Image 1 (spheres, rainbow, N blue to C red):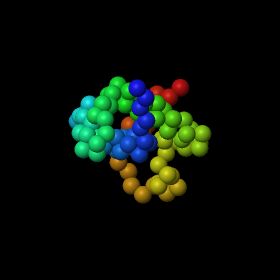
Image 2 (cartoon, one colour):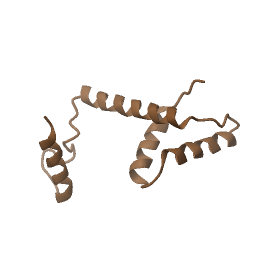
Image 3 (tube, rainbow, N blue to C red):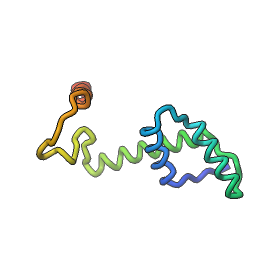
Length: 101
C-alpha cells in the first residue's frame, strides 16, 4: 500500500505538537482516520509510516534552510537591533552554541 501525505498536513502536525503539549502522534493519526471515514475514504493510516514520512519532511526542511544559508540560531526580527531579552532563552542558545564543534 502506498501513502501520499500533503505537506500542509506535516505543517499542521508540526505546529500542533509544538503548541499543544502532550499530543501524541497516535491520537493525531486516529483523528485523521475518523476524518477520512467521515469523508468516505479508507480508514487505514499507518502511524509508523506517517512518523517516518514526517521525520523525512522535517529533515528536508532543515536541508532547505541550510541551502538558503539561514542560521536558526539567529533571530531575524532582532538581529540588527535587539528589542528585548529573555534570559532563559538566551542561555539555551548560548549552551547550544558552545556544544557545536
